[in-house]
Amino acid sequence: MTGFAFGTVSELILLCFVPLFLTVATVWILWRALEKIEPDADTRSFLTFIVVIVPFVMFVCLGMAVIFHDGIAKWSGSPTVLPLNPPSHAMVAGAVIYIGQTIWLWWNWRKLRAA
Image (tube, rainbow, N blue to C red; front, side, top):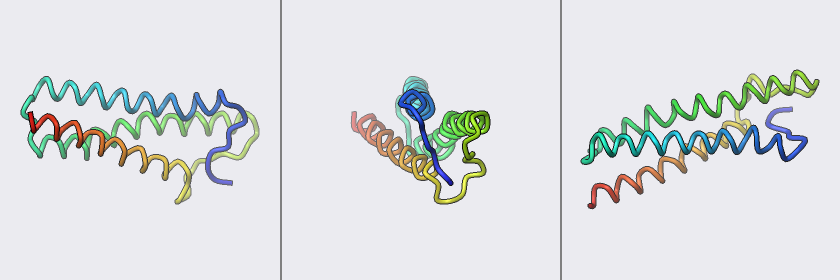
């Protein structure tokens, strides 16, 4: 069995929504810091942020959630999710989160450039 299987709502919140919130909050804080450091953010700095910073933050936050979920599954005797087999639910969710954050950052960057 691949993918996530949650027994309770608390597991869903702890292993899905908390890492998602941490990812979005961290990217938002770093984006605001970039805006303060470089108010006239050019295309190169925007693309660097999208290609380097966002995937790194996602890898750390969401990767830790997958590792914690795997540890909990081993401890409880449930089937584990690691190694992830494509197309797993975690990979699809990561792609959706990345695309969503990229669109959100592009929208903010576009407004910053217009002002």
